[in-house]
Length: 227
Image (cartoon, rainbow, N blue to C red; front, side, top):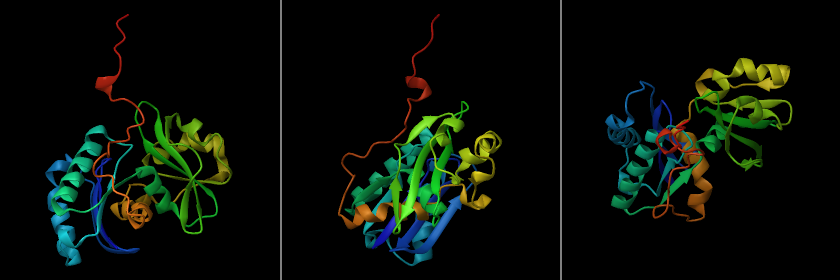
C-alpha cells in the first residue's frame, strides 16, 4: 500500500511517501511562508526521493483539519486535484488523530492540542490499543484547561497547543503531565499516512465529498457585534 500524504494545516508544511508502515520519504518546511508556494515542489521532491511516480501511489491522504483555515483549504484542494488527475482514492484524516499516532506507543491517554489562538486549543483525546488509535471524545475547540479536565492521569500532551499553554496545563496536571520531545509537536505527513491507512484498506474514498473540518467558523463568518 503506497500512500502520498500531505499536511498544510499549520505553520509547517509536510509531504510524505509511505509504503505500508514504512516511511520512504518525508519533507517538512517550517519556514512559515504560504504553503501554496512550496507544496507542489515538495510533492515532486518526495516522489523523486522515493524513486516513484504519482501514478504508482495507491491513495492520497490529507490533513482535513482542524488548523489554519487557509492552510487546510490549500492541502485539500491540492490533494483533490492530484487524486482526480491520477484516478486514485483520497482520504481525509484529522490532524489531531495524526498527532496521537506521533505520541504512541503509550499506555496513557493522549490529549492532542493545536493552538487555535484566542487563548483556545483544538483538542482531541485518544488512547492506543492493539496498534489502533481509539477516539475517547469528539474533537473540540476550548480553553486548554477544559481540554484536559476529564482526561485520565497521567496524560500525554502533544501538539503546539500543549507547548503554548504548558504552564497553565501544569497547574492542573502537575506531575501527571507527560510530553514527547520537542520535534514531535508539529504534525508530520508520515503520521497522516498512518492515520489514513485503515480507511484506505477498507477502500473508502473522500474525493467527492471531502470538506475541511474547522471546528469553529472563520473570522469572516463570525457575527459582528454592532452594539
